[in-house]
Image 1 (tube, rainbow, N blue to C red):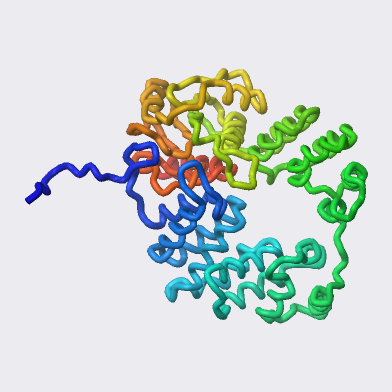
Image 2: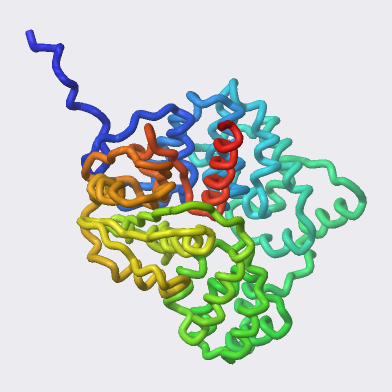
Length: 440
């Protein structure tokens, strides 16, 4: 008979081989959701694996907590699809389905998400639409006016008018009733957006310049299309002027970081707008050390369709931390630990981080041991958590910001674990420390 009174070596491990934390179902759902681009693969795991893990975890999480995570993923983290998947799974469960209508009304923020939810609902075969789903989709439909409906009235598998016929919502008034009739009869007024302008056959350079002059290009669309405007030689002064006018308070720093490779000639304006957008944030007092993961896995793309990497997301947070921390030192780690020079900010900081060392393994434990020799009030680590060695506890307050969705990680126990990469993570740290100070 084999011995059973032995040390268990079969503890959960990260993909790099370090011991992983054992976490509750709610924590597992949160870590899988908050930086998830649904069905898109990551460096270590496939998108399908992540989606299946989310589905398998939901039955073990309280209905109210499940809904809270779904809403937070859309409203705070701006992730479009994962909340829809969560609500689809909730609709299957007797314990959870009573909250589906409320969730759909809050999570659906664009008309095309109505059809996308039904596509997820029928992904494994057509089934009747539940009362809660009909109610939620119908209430969400009422939020949209003619401009939004016309913009997303596309030739897709499940059209907007299909959703209308399937859910039978009651219009709020005669004006909305007439609007829906125009939708059904394909009589909506086509909005003058950059998408319609470029698909109409209008010369691309002429179209971009007209949209810029008429202020019809949204701030995020402007950043995302810098490459396209440069490709057709749009008048540079028009682009610079548009960037300066941006109200960029809702655009995350990593969006600016991702645009940088395609912003030749506009770097100065882009950086000024980015820094201006975060200048009013409350300062994080005390001595902060920011430790950025510079290992090879961080260079994987956020999704198959994206040209943004996890390193871009990390750099966006680094730029943000540099601006909001009262006193901060920034380090990178991979096979070694390197301090980034302290007299740089903005895009120069990104360049300094990127050139600090060669991207190799992930030795976070070694890095924390070295950092613990420093004097600090808090350490903030930005990583995908897939370390190869054991991570010791921090000497001060310790935060691990997870920008991946892998099943196993190390950011628990003595560490405060935060999922995702929006500016909300900084606000969370600020408010948490205020709360802890008030308790003392």
